[in-house]
Figure 1 (tube, rainbow, N blue to C red):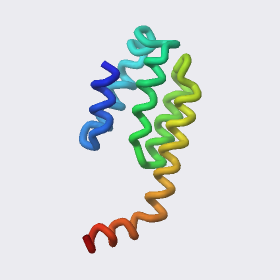
Figure 2 (figure 1 turned 90 degrees about the horizontal axis):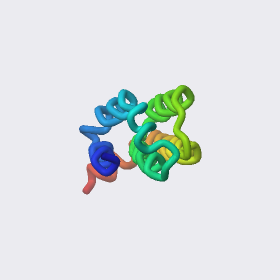
Figure 3 (figure 1 turned 30 degrees about the vertical axis):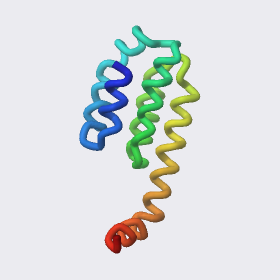
Figure 4 (figure 1 turned 135 degrees about the vertical axis):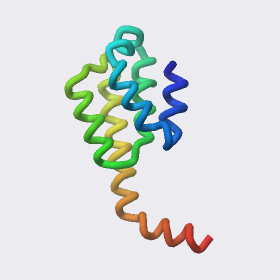
Length: 102
């Protein structure tokens, strides 16, 4: 299940749907993987998001829902998303120009 969700999260067309599914089924994931490395692995897949609003959404979710054994992973995911959001906002125009020339 974790690999499958990771694959769906890795696809921009399935990302939002997979996150919605994770939120809805979080109690099941906690029961099945809570406190294990598997839960951290599942959470780490959320690092594919690139917008600040996604980071805020994920942060708010984990403020209200526990992730035993994955607290540090949540922090790392948020840091990764926010770094990408800053980079994208700073360099989006340059990237678009570079791609247009190629």
